[in-house]
Length: 205
Image (cartoon, rainbow, N blue to C red; front, side, top):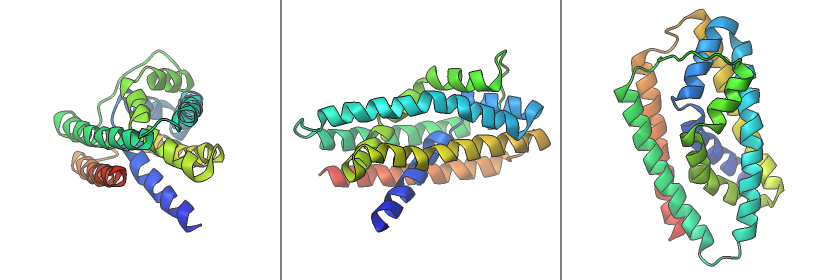
């Protein structure tokens, strides 16, 4: 149980860097939230899941096939750490360089937009091939294939909670999160990302 709780805490903290990051999915979610409230966010989340679950499974299968390669886990740890450092920098640049509540309009419904803005978002794909790759590898080491389901469960609820809550709040107020609070939130997340990046490197060596 202690091992599960420790892994859960790591997944939740690190996942926040991807789940809560500004980008096209978040912007489209705010747009649909203004029209549909929390229901729009839930539809976006289901669309996001359609892309994310198969991606995690495919990456997990790839990791299993590569586990016999010498130094494989060291390489994963280094790549994951570099990914965390890179995303921390991108988070800070995005927060201080752009308006936090920027919006985009889309002709697609929220479910299809959730699919498109996930599958076609290079940062989403890169996140799973770097930071997420390390989490997938750790989950497999701890619980084999069952670890993929555990990881997915620990991660996906955050997508639903974040997208549903922000879409609901946007339906109540287009300025639901002040610029100051938004920046403080992502500075904290970036700090955690740097911390875990360092722990990844320490584990590798």
